[in-house]
Length: 482
Image 1 (cartoon, rainbow, N blue to C red):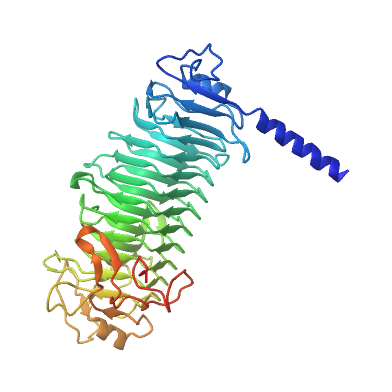
Image 2: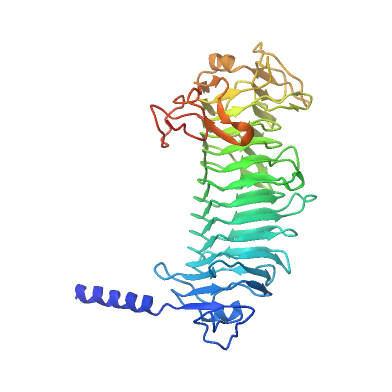
């Protein structure tokens, strides 16, 4: 009986795969009354393809402008038989106009791939490529060029959508500088297990990638995030509003953060995320910043995050900033094996330092030396300005704790600053194994942050359960290759 059931399943699967068809769409020479099964007798519209495609079918789309049309199949694919919309080999079909601000609509659909399109300028400005709803899963947006210069979000995964992939795309030019709006990719509303990987995202005025509102277990990896002009230079990655247990790995984030002086290359207003092996450079404001505060009535505690093996170089303000506000504390974060190279400028008339621990806006004032269980282990800090000795500042309200350390003046506070040696002597539980030395990058001016063989960061890190070569992990984002 079991053998019979297995044979029936194999026959059903074989028949399904055998019935899969390849269809063609050609806006110039096609006709929707054609059978659509050859390039010579192609359909004319994507509308026809949307109505016909079944699991396992592929639709090859010829070059041309598909105005006022959308990719929105009537059916889902399956794991073994996805529905595929792909550019005809060597050609780039252009999708514009759209429907209610969207050009690719995969709400409630599964196992659909969209590959190789230029997607831009919808008639209205909403979610250009959208995957929304709990039944929206295992879709794939690949190798597309997606933009909306007057809009707000070219790619959105929302409302519980899960296991979708956005890979190898160029996503760019969105938002409004005067509003600080516009994100290249948004994952919003209890979405989980989505992957945003190997994309180029640039010129979004708010952030290039944002995870928000309880989105869990998503991965943002190996993306190149930047701006080509300061007027479009928002943040890099924002992980906010209860979006916990996500991973931000191996991204290159640069030339961002110029729209305001508070934009971050990576901002973490949530908990238990892993932020590792990211390379951050030439950003106008902060590098990496866990921040705890309430936004719109929703608490955002930044607790228990692992910030490991990142390289932060040449930020306009601090490379690391840990912020606690009102009744929320950034607690129990582990900052380990990072390289943070100093800021060239100043902060409100004083040195920019390398790291700021900011408790100024807490309702119950903290005192310098209360690190809230955050630990800083085996990091390399280096300031390029000769004679600079104090690299870390504690910004707080009220009188200093009388540590005898040098002080600096800033907005209404009475900050205390320390050198690494002072910190590690006075607070060994929070600070240990940190170095102050030149990291010896191969060619930082050209964006090459690999380590030279003589770098003090080689084999100087701490094992935190991540892969490494050699006797011990290297500090920084890029392992030295022997």
